[in-house]
Image (tube, rainbow, N blue to C red; front, side, top):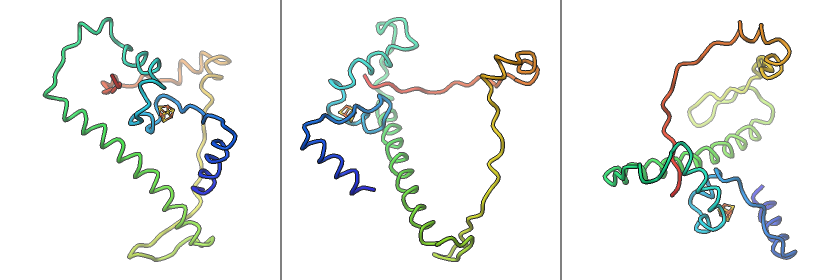
Amino acid sequence: MMAKKVAAFWHGVKDKKPPRKLKYKDPRCQTCRWGSTCQGAERLEAASQDIESFEEIEVVETLGPKVRLRMELKDIETMAKAQRTEVEGEIIKGMEGREIIVAGGHRVVRKKRDGGRMIDTPRMKKEAPEVFEEWSKSRADSWPLNFYLI
Ligand code: SF4
């Protein structure tokens, strides 16, 4: 997979085609040094969400290290998730269709699980609003922390 990506990259260089711009929220853009020029407009828009004016925001620099640590941890989580997916793929390949193996001091089980059912809620809301009303319940309020690059 990595070889394919590298080959695609070098084809792009040879053909003088700029790579496709990633989505603003892509983790790679969060630490990219070209971010402020490449994603400047998107970053400004995201940073100005939920606020009336920047003057009203209190600067709390004592929390700076915590916020930076949180962003670093998010990067580590993203990398770990990508690595885990890759390693799991290798394990699945190595199991060669077997459902259960023992390796590395663990019993590794890979059995098909019922995918369950999904409900097309936008369609239900449109075609049977009374059912949707009856069926849907409000969720509890939440207070998420959102982080925007400035
Ligand atoms: S911010 Fe960096 S990584 Fe993201 S699209 Fe732009 S150049 Fe690519």
